[in-house]
Length: 295
Image: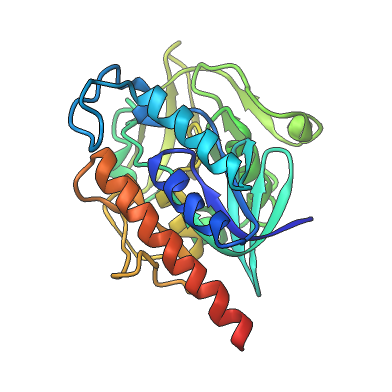
């Protein structure tokens, strides 16, 4: 397992800004992420400090990547599916596992909402977003995992300790998973139909599809697309408010050694604030590592 001082999840302005500080402090720093920052979609940015002419978000991110690589940061293009904390942090991706003394979540804030009727109605009553939190309640019951990527496979594997009756619902999409998970698919039933509705009485009882069919279901775990910042937070017992991770004045969460920066912490969604929060997080992670060395 590869070991680092600092692991940063997310290749947006907050994560890259933090890496610039930690790598310059000679801490072995790893950034893991995909090129899916919302900033890449910005064709013109006209209010960022230091640029008299408009620049694109893609330009800013590409230049920032060159900058952090120059000071020794490692960057891996991969999807993080889980973060675990024992004595140190373990970050699991679709391809490998990494260990870090401290971790920064800088994954932005997801805006995607699933268009499934009654989904919100049954949240907490059969609809769950956290296998670690709620898997226990479904011992030997029929459950589903909604998603088509590595994150969904990872969640299904976690649920196997509670029940073997697991279906992965891809919601009309093709499975899009890494080679590491290809051998795991046979462990689960796969349903590729588009999901339109869930129903029940006080608790979820049935799931409906676009072709008019339906089936009984005791629980449905949402693992759509890639894991979000709040998905990671829930599993680690980190405090959240809505879709935002709660942090202190040092950008640290209530879990020692776990920091967060950028849009995933709420507040003003601007490049400048993300860069600033990433810089602060980077400085405080340096202090955290140095304090560890004194213990």
